[in-house]
Length: 442
Image 1: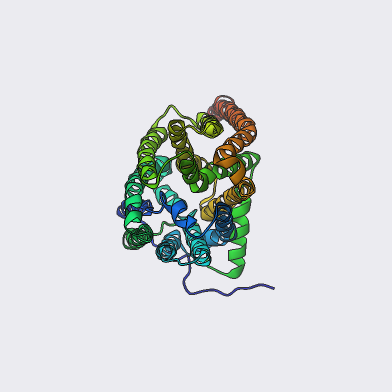
Image 2: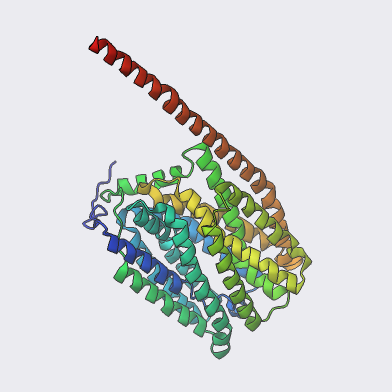
């Protein structure tokens, strides 16, 4: 049976972008990224949740939260490809903002679960769509190579905002336990307004929305991340590496900081300082010509090894240094690694493909965090971080070497093919042409 129910709001009605609109998209990206980074709940969420939940329950909540991501990533990615990335982002940020406010008003564990899980649904409308929106805006004018630089500058605004919000979050929490979530909700609604006022949808390979197209778009986006052997291995590297660093960023870091002796106020200042250092490192990393794709893949594995494994030691000052590496890993995967996978995907299914990646990242996250819930009270986050770092390095290290070697071979064959074409086939054609011309003249 074929379902051809066509809605009146079609994704093929997409305005052609002018250069001025492209610049406004870049501006909207920077401003909205700044307000999206005003996450005043980060230094206090463990303390806030502890009034309602135990540590295993927190692990369960994080597992369910990312389960929602797994369920909704693909359909919301296809939604963005068919209805527009800008529209998807606006809807997602509004949902995230409203339910962030409601989390602060929670009076029970059940309410926290419901509101937190709903924010996860909202964020799936943003995930993939924001990257595809910016990448295709640049691609329309042949500027996609600037993506990493623009993403890194956006990361600067994000880190500045997050650093400021982390310092304020502890003080807001001291005034009122709900205030950090209220401030965060307002900031997110401002972000949605900025995208709505300044943002324009780039021209993409789009089609009318039908239920058949929607299903096909979802299938095509998922298969895109495994379309060749190299792309499949690069996707696996991205999925595993991202799942590992994301589990630290979204769950373990705050608990680890509490475990090694930091108070809520100290955590605010600590993570604010880490964000500033992280911002400078990412800004340099994305712009430096010293770090090729090969070096970046290898460096990412080294970063995981030196940031995760020593966590077992549990010294406060050492933990602060390790948290820089743990935070840097997540920022680098969003800014640097995502550039690599973006370059391999087709514009038509880019949002769906990126959402597919994030869905599998979430599955990795779920596996790590859910498993940790069984023994987090026995060995602590110190032991878990060391274990996760060691196991992931055993897989990521040989995988990075394969990717590097494959690219070298591909580059060699490409150069050989170009040489043969240029110096043998082209010259031979010229000789034949000259010979023919000589016969005609004769």
